[in-house]
Image 1: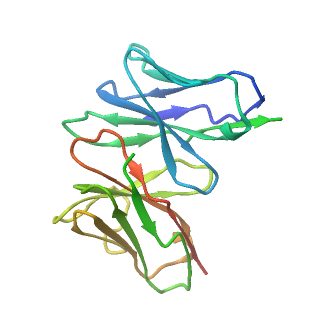
Image 2 (image 1 turned 180 degrees about the vertical axis):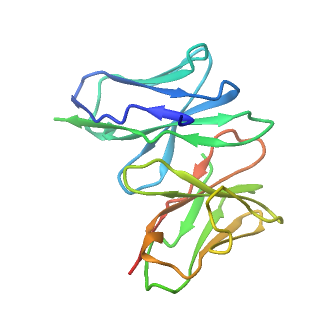
Length: 112
Length: 115
């Protein structure tokens, strides 16, 4: 079983729509969670960290469910510029150890 | 966020030659740097972890004699792909962090094509 699994999509949505997707992780000891955004042929860039209580950054909302071992990302009022691959990243056992595990990414395409 | 610079962004080389990729942390001192490889439509795969002043730790299946990593200073790590073959063609990305960072910051990546 992969350490981090994501629905690859693609999610094709019209501008202004809401899109949400999940990521599951296998290591229950994982401590830190992130969503990264990766544009085609570019490096991943940190979108947001995911906190236990859930957090929001503008149109983006991240949730963590430790009991079920998944995190989610919701994008409201989608923009064309939101088209990208979203990587779920889990950091196991920080700060005792440091190991980032990456999902394969969820592709989102926002159409006009 | 922290800035990590990777160079070159793109390189084409002949089979059998070696290629060096540099990764620099520009505004912080990186105690640890990571090298990843990413094939199209796949996730980032960790190749090795390097700590400044010590030998790199390679992931299972990664040949340390083929992928030479040097982390000589707190701001620079290099990955040298030796005797490159077409199957080494990939997107190589570095990331860097300090002990207090939970997240990683990535260089721009190097697209290597071996012909």
